[in-house]
Amino acid sequence: MTSTQTKKQQYLAGLRSGLPVITGFFPVGIAYALLARQAGMSPVETVLMSATVLAGSSQIMAAGMILQGAGITAIILATFVLNLRHLIMSTCVMRHFSGEPAGLRLLSSFGVVDESFAVFCMEPEENRTLFRFLGLISAVYLAWVSAAAVGVLSAGILPQTLLDSMGIAIYALFIAILLPSLRQNRRLALLALLTAICNSLFSRLLPASWALIAATLLCAALGTAFVDLQTDGQKEESADAP
Image (cartoon, rainbow, N blue to C red; front, side):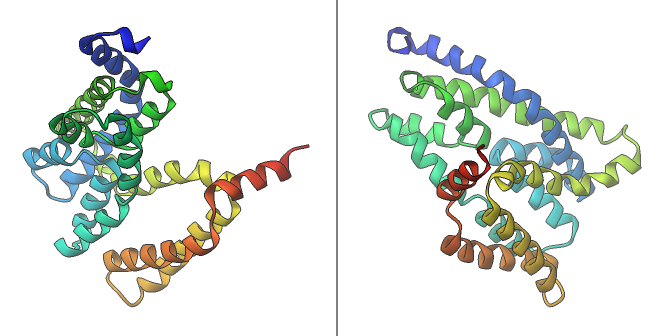
């Protein structure tokens, strides 16, 4: 039981639980670094962004928008909207650490990302301790920053055709995130399609970066009115059952 473990044992257990995440982090981290280099970011800027931001989808989006020539205001707003989900994830994680020192809770909040959140939530209740989570996010952080460094080093030796293809990394990442949910929820799939259509229409009137922001905000607002993630998923699973 975790309650009988020392803080060091909890931390090491968290490190071990984060090892599977590394295999998924590395390809995305390398893709981000290659895209960032294509966008004109220096090697130091590329790695420093991973070290200080620690948000794969946002970093890829930002690098892609830089590559497209988007302004700083559009980049900040787009990544802010994309990362709003972290408010919910952080709330779910931090409620387990209510009695811990504020400094350690603040440190742990930096490591709340999709992968660490998923691993932490799958742990038994007795294993959801602060030091176990600190171990988990240590593995996540080291993997992500290391992947960026590997990507920077790879940028000088990979063929140009492969480097040019990194522009589609953001789309592949978002599809991978969305696809499992879309398959179980028809209303959510319809919302994703509507967002794509709105983005296409808005891009005829606005710069591409602002069109993406406008489509995301509009369709997210519409989605709150007719998409119920839990209820819809349960209904469709029941309908598909024999």
